[in-house]
Length: 260
Length: 316
Ligand SMILES: Cc1cc2nc3c(=O)[nH]c(=O)nc-3n(C[C@H](O)[C@H](O)[C@H](O)COP(=O)(O)OP(=O)(O)OC[C@H]3O[C@@H](n4cnc5c(N)ncnc54)[C@H](O)[C@@H]3O)c2cc1C
Ligand SMILES: Nc1ncnc2c1ncn2[C@@H]1O[C@H](COP(=O)(O)O)[C@@H](O)[C@H]1O
Image (tube, rainbow over all chains, first blue to last red):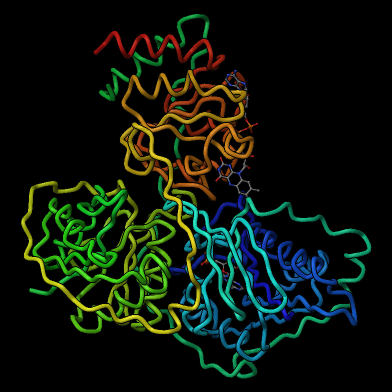
């Protein structure tokens, strides 16, 4: 099997994020591998390992695909140190500020060229929080969509079955290769890169491509931010210590606020 | 006057409150047609429940492909309607299903998409609260039809009764959209309490409940509230996953959010910090959630909540 995992570098969840000229300022914050994408990397490795592994010369490969600035190599390297085989990073100044539609068109083109059987994504990037890129990739490629998976089984003969968990309930869904999967965080426990894995990742190939090399032209974003204003941070209000009357104090607060 | 589509949102075969919210926002832009995607023979019954909010027309499309193929089939059918009607905008509920339908519709109709809007203006400008509610953003689709997903419980709905004209349309679904097949579906278990994302008040419990949600549930019931849970509580199997609030659970934005025995990890905050009023009960005075609480009680939830429940019931 040829497996691709889409990973994104995002600002650290705890970092203060700012908008500059309508786009997220990615320069001045600590950046990390989107934590939901670690589950995607882990699941790709587990699927390969369940069927003979992805060691050199082995039957399967796991390729990391990312679109982002050059410093996204750090996030990609982390996925490689977990055990993925190689990576493709699309970086181009024309891609700065891309929306999900532009991102998905670039990723879909890279995926189409690679001849993969499975593409695995996270369910959401922690910065954009859109949960749309996997569905867009599926629509662009015309591949089956198996998203929000809490469980994946792969028959290497070419059939994938998942359990989809969303607010609408639990569905059992299956499809034949090639498929686009997204995984929820309940699916597995991502491994920590081992020392050996970190050393090995240094030698793995990250193929950097610009738009011309991918073969798509830059698509401008189809939605525009008109303005972005920081909201006043929530200030801590009253804090009381319960000495038997905490419940009463709480009720009084609710009455005062006309909440009851 | 321009026309606007909404994708009618249903739960247990009834139009949700969210459907009226979508209609209310859409009516600012133009005359509203609600698209009802239904199983074969089920359209009329579903359409009959779409009777609240400023809805002028209901377009019923029936096909068993919706149940058998899920998001891709629904998106194909909606995209076909968009191509035929060229609406000014399409409003869809912002949950996993709605966002994925929006994603595919945007690709199929070459349109820009905005997710998680908390408000939509007459000119199609959407308001979003991003970065954990720390920033308000106004944005607008600049290509194709404005595809906007709207967060439940964000828009003050006009619940006036409507009697829209009902028409039927044909489902147009491609072979690609049928490549994945749903073999079984289990709807979420519904208790007697309000729906989390629609509730005015949410009372949530975390690891601090130590698996005993009775105090949380009793307090919730005294307030007519929905019950939520942190991931620590859903992971431990103490409460169903469908009640998880947070980044990988539901985003709620009620009038009042009461967090009990929840520390306030960033992933939990991501799902609740735009609540209008936040109350925290936690025995650790250093719990980070106190930093964003309008009112905090440092104490044991098993002591505080029963007294608060009594107090609320006494006021009624
Ligand atoms: C990828 C990812 C996604 C995640 N998504 C989510 C998500 O969607 N939602 C979510 O909630 N979390 C999520 N998490 C987990 C999150 O990081 C925290 O681990 C989780 O929110 C902690 O839950 P908690 O506050 O209940 O538990 P803890 O952090 O253990 O806090 C328990 C609190 O209860 C207090 N307490 C204990 N006993 C009592 C008592 N008797 N009375 C009063 N207070 C008491 C303690 O002082 C403590 O503050 C995610 C994590 C990851 C890595
Ligand atoms: N720039 C990107 N590069 C690679 N993968 C991405 C990128 N953006 C999004 N993805 C994938 O799509 C998933 C959902 O992202 P989003 O739709 O932005 O919330 C992520 O978890 C990633 O797997």
